Image (cartoon, rainbow, N blue to C red; front, side, top):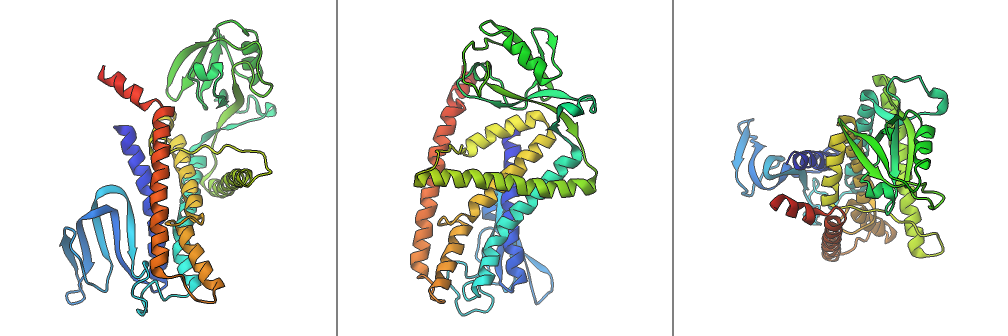
Length: 385
C-alpha cells in the first residue's frame, strides 16, 4: 500500500507540473484557462473569482460554470491534475482569449510548455540528488578517498546464474564465501575461483542484508562473465548546493541525450539497415514494481527514479503521436506548410481520438506483459494461500 501511495504521489507530481506548464504559458499569452484542477474529474469542490464581490465563490460538485475567470478545482481522482484551455478543441475561433485563433508560434509555446516543465522538474530533482548524495562510480586512483566505498552491481543479464540468484542492479556485494570484498578485482576473482561450484554471496540491498547462493558458469559469453553481472566501485558523493544545480543541469542533458540516442537507434532499426536495438518499455504495473525497489534503496534513489520518469514523460509527449502534445504541434506545422490553412478541426479531433485509443491499447498490452514479467499473479496467489 505504501508503494502504491508513493507511486501515486510521483505520478501526480509529474502530471501536475506538466499541466501547470500549459496553464502558466497560456495565461501569460492572453489565453483563458477555463479550469485548472488538482486531480481528475469529477469535481469535488472549486473556487472562482466573483467580480461583483471581489471574492471567490465556492462551487460544489461537477456543475458547469460560466465565468471570465479560471475555476480552480479539487477533484475526486487524486492523480496529478489537468488544465482546460478555452478553444483547445477548435471552438471559439473568433474570441480573442481563445486558443484556436492564436498565431501558430503562440499555440506551439502553450503545447510545448508542459514538456519543458517536465525537463525543469527533472533538473530540480537531479540537483537534489547531487546535494543529498548518491553512490557514483569511482576509479582505482580514488580508492581510499571515500569512507563508504563499496562494490555494486550495475547490470544483471537475463537467463544467467545472477538472474536465478535474484540479484538486482545497485545490490552491494559485501562478501563472497565469507571473504570481505572491497574492490571489483576481489569480487571478480572470488567469482572466478568458484566456477562450476556453489558460492555464497552476502548482499546489502538498501537497509537490509541477505545471503544468496549460486553456481558461476564455466562457459559463458565474453561480455557476461561467469555470473552474468557487471560491477563498479562506487562511493557516496555529495555536492554543495551551487554545484549540485550545475551538475543537475549537465546530467539532465546527458540523460536526455542518451534516451534520444537509443530511441533513434530503435527507429533506425525499424526502418531497416541498422542493427536492431531493444528498447524496454514498461507500464504502470512495472513502474509500481520499480518504485518499490527504489523506495527500498533510499530517498535519493527515489528522487533519481522520479527524474528519469519526468524526462521520459517529456520525451514521449513531444513525439508526433496523435493525442499527445507533439501530435498537436505536428498539425500546427502542417497548417504552416499549407500557408495558414488548418486541417479540419473535426478530422484532427477524430485522429486524436483514434491515437488515444491506440495508446490505451498499447498500455493494455504493456500491462499484460508486466503482469507476466513481474509474476504479479503468482505473488497474489501466494498472498491468498
